[in-house]
Structure formats: C-alpha cells, structure tokens
Length: 273
Image (cartoon, rainbow, N blue to C red; front, side, top):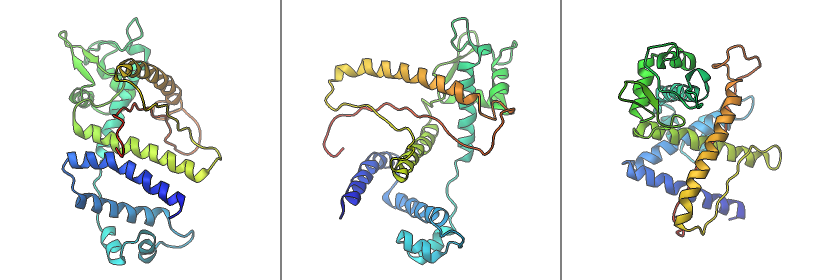
C-alpha cells in the first residue's frame, strides 16, 4: 500500500470515529449506516463520475463503487431522507437573527439587538421578519427561534435575542442539520484543495496546540468566541450586500453559495481518539 493510500485510510478512520460515536449515541446501527453509505456511493458515482458525452450505466457505477449491478439497480430505486424543509426553515431563521444584529433599525443605542414587540411599533419583530425573511409568517419564525433557545420573551412581553446568530441550543433536529451542512462544506473545501494542488486553493486554516493546561482554556474560549463572532459579523455585512435575496437589485451572473465557517475544538489528548 502506497503512502497516499495509507494516509487516506488513516484520515478516514479519524473522520469516522466521532461520526460513529454520534451514530451510536443516537441509535443508528452499522446496518443503517452501511445502507446510507451504499446509496451515497451509488449516487455520487452516477452523477459525478460519468464519461463526458455518454450516459452513465449501471455497469460503470458497479465498477467504480465495487457494488454489484443488482445492488446498484436496487439502490437507484430508493429515495433518500429529505431535509429540505428543515434547511429552508434554518436559512430563514438564520437570516432573521443576522438581520437583527446588523440592521440599525432593530438595534438599541449601544448598537446591540434591541428587545422588540411582536407587532407593535414601526421596528417590531414582525417588521424584522418581513424585511429579512420574505413572506414567512412572523409567528412561525418566532416559534422556531424560541424552540431552539435563540430568543425569549421578557416580563414586558418583548422578544430578546439571546445568542449572536441562529445556533440551536435546544432541539436535536436543528443541531443535526448543522452536522449535515457544516461538515459537508468543510469536506468539500478539503476535496477541492486536494484536486487543485497548489493552484488557487480555498482558505482552510486552524491553530492548535496539544499540551495545554485546563486552566488556560476558559480565557481562550472566551477570546476566540469574541474575535470569531466579530469577524463573522464583518464578513456577513460584506456578503449580505451582494446577496440577491437581501438586495434584489444586485447584478451578476450565475448563482453561488459562499462563506466562511469557524469552529472551536477541544478534547483530552488520548492516543487513537
């Protein structure tokens, strides 16, 4: 086995270990995971590894994936779980919370997200939703943000933003949606950089040390969260000015998804973990 394949196998094991922990913790068996993996192998091979100008065949998908022709044919008839509704809900709620943090009409005198009445006054929560989430009913957005712990009502009945951005603190469905989207985007960037070699790689960096005392981490968590949030807010302002949903008058061709993701990590240093 050459060094490339050895390194790839080692990387796959590292990638799978936290995923398997999550699967076992949530009652997903190996059989369930294997079925999903087979379907993805079939689907990616069928859609992305065809010969230009020729129709992809069951036989070619079988050769590429190692699955039998019978298995490929069976898998092609299976529909996959669809989280498009959750994705739509997530995107709408995220827009509202982001708009709340940057739109001056909904900030207090200190530049922080102001407590809002649901539908009273010019700068209400209802108006916030209309400005930043289109035709979604404000009550539906409020219910979702309250469900995941992003907002809460105070004793005066005003709605307060509790977190800087839409990151579900309660509700496993929302958190699992983030698993599917954020990890996918990181892996896509790594794959892109591997294909490009040294030519125009996409930004992908981290900073870490492996011999840190426990006492050093509290300050680092706080500092890194503060600086990361400030950077994300600045980049959000830049991107939102070019987003057609936020600014319909924006000109240009094509439709792209682009952004920056930042995450904090911490664990005990244990071999093979």
